[in-house]
View 1 (cartoon, rainbow, N blue to C red):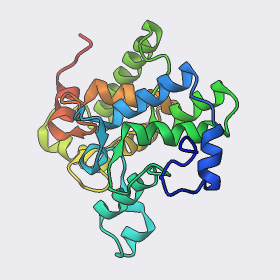
View 2 (tube, rainbow, N blue to C red):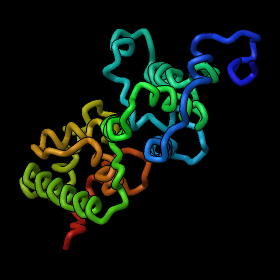
View 3 (cartoon, helix red, strand yellow):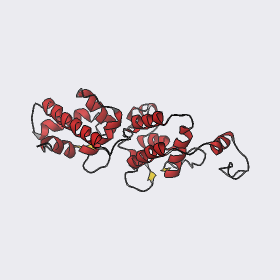
View 4 (cartoon, rainbow, N blue to C red):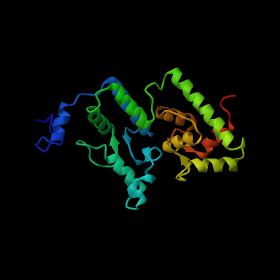
Length: 229
């Protein structure tokens, strides 16, 4: 009874019953779930909060924010609460256990490891092959191409005011940094076709302070200080 009665109310709900029957994540799936959590948990606290995802999740296009019924933080908190599930407490913070529970539940509907991995790569911009030399070489080639296209778009100028204007063009919501989604949009505008799973690797290459977004000084250094000489 206790095994199934997760919330300890003396009753077994359908969700609790189904959860009791679920299988644990395979090693491949667990690896992807852990990678995604590490990407989100910027401060290494073991929990994902509003501050952790503010550069990764852009709420400015959310219906409730546009209509003025919710602030950006409230939209993000609602997003975080969607991971709470049966064991959750709707506190606006995702613990590692809540994160694992969410993806273990989701995993039940995805019988193929390959499909699960592809889904995680697409959603979070991570790659199962992040650590392979082939993948690293591909990221280097992509970032080199990005720099070349940015220089071309700036008219080969290294003037700060020109590059500031270019940065603001890609900083769609004018937040002062280029988020993961804005980076993806930037690549599209530069006519560079990139699989979603490589976006995080590109971000890491440019995001010197590893806070999950590209500030202007990082953008500036990336263009001016040629890392490929």
